[in-house]
Image (cartoon, rainbow, N blue to C red; front, side, top):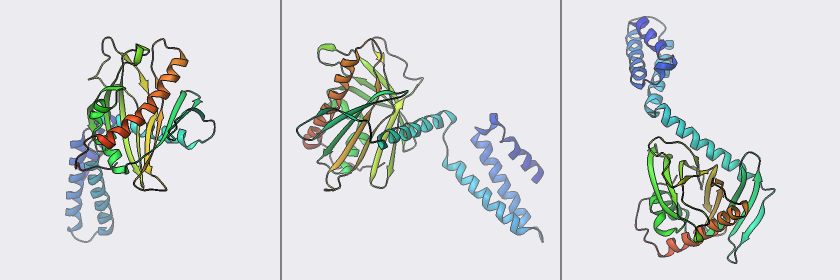
Length: 288
């Protein structure tokens, strides 16, 4: 029985069989059963058998903990890559230029990065605890079109585990139709590091959401929002929004810069209004 089991395990090492989760699980279970028989068969390398059994049990638990398909795992990796790249950009403090600074302290900065282009960074403090803010921006993401005039619709296309999702966002046309209809398909990833939440994303391809007629498919990313309690008041949250977008089409850079920086300032204004007048209710919040 053991030689046959080993052959079965060897088979799952081939690339075309690795995705067959059921086969892998069957192999792990078979190893465990065979090792049980060997352990109680009489004198022998019981220490070695027990060691391998523990490793086999660990393998089984890991197989159960990773139920994603190869395609789903590719989205998870894209989300994590977006998060990694976004944080690396934000960690670099030099080279930022102020685009807009409002009287209430809201600020938009920008810098030009190789291979990415111009990115924008919004820095604001919101008079709301982190949990409430996260609930509005993530748990009720699909309601964003109700309170943000710059967003027509946000739809979650697929959730992958608790940290990753695929979304489709349709942007509203700008005043005077300076920028026509745009939409985005993105992979988004949320993580918590201590008391800080990071919500990152970047454009991706999703077969169930092809390009729409009359709408330009724009691209974003790496982009992210970072939320953490204000150092002076834990009931306040500091929000940093890194924005990187390629709107596509024939648009002068001056218009793009104006639209994107103003969009971030407007977002902070509309978010505050939503948090103070909107109905958040007693909804359980799943923090990062």
